[in-house]
Image 1 (cartoon, rainbow, N blue to C red):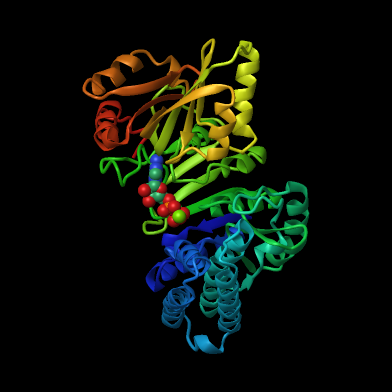
Image 2 (spheres, rainbow, N blue to C red):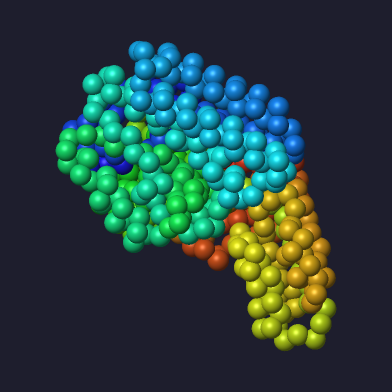
Length: 457
Ligand code: ADP
Ligand code: MG
């Protein structure tokens, strides 16, 4: 059994859907369980709809919803014969009815709570899977539509819910396994789940990868395949660095660090379930299914301490927090860390000295709650509009000359912070975001000038 997850771009139009039908058909003998994201930019569009309604703009919200409806109808009509007579079509009709009511409610309340947002966004996946299941069936693939909210059981931390692994395992075993054993192909939504009370939750933006890993772990699959519009995990974000290459294999540790430091290629939590079950993850390109992608697994056989990839995060803020009370160093560290953690804000990095803590935070602004808490015992100075850049690779902290190589590139760039040696597998520094693109490209040309064909392709 394998889990196959298709991202938004892999299902954005009729021809993309035709491609994934071929990809699934070629792997039927491996007994796939399919997970799918919302089509194209639907999640973003649904969020805009909900925000318009909550701002009291009911008509524009409904207008935007209509555009979302006609986009899906048009893809469905191009992909499924007699679409309007299918069960999928009826289901989608009722979803749009529910969404209209929801938008009405939001425009009356003038409020978009995290809970309502999750409800609204969940329709993206419910709709995409309803269309694709019908396409599969018309192509003689015995696909069965399932509602992930009955399987992925989470806490009630809306917009970033955490799955309850035990309950999720049981539900997946009970509801998904029999379908596979019956020779059918379960089609599930990525990204969404529900709380024990049945409230719809989501796992956080781009959470479909995480869903695939969770379901894969529950079923003990032999492989988790993540299908994207890029050829695997690359040596850098190809949108920023056109020369980026595919990394053939990386370890769970490296992949974890890569996503932690911002590489958008995978959801940051998606590696953990795979590691727990020791299940290899492959990241492939749905536009070029024959091309090798990336393998992510327990041990990377190469003993080379090479830089495998360059990640970045933008914008980030570098906060300097200086104690202004007579606190002991220990008390000060404790209060500083607590100010972040109580808000579930985990800094990307922390640095400490006797009476100063430096924290690297993701985002454009620092929440006023955190700032207020800190200013009770410290003075706070922020450097905003920064970007963090991280070199990732096994044991690169021990790589000789890494500092010289990096500093040769940063000659004319002002450097805000360097974090080296904390993790064995990464080297991170902070610069102004305006310098990001040239720095990424220069770094890439230095570290991948002579690329090793056993590691990259
Ligand atoms: P999905 O189709 O699953 O939603 P996304 O489009 O969200 O996929 O994620 C893939 C994107 O991640 C790519 O378009 C690419 O720009 C970005 N990306 C960032 N870093 C990397 C990297 N190291 N390797 C590959 N892609 C990366
Ligand atoms: Mg995406």
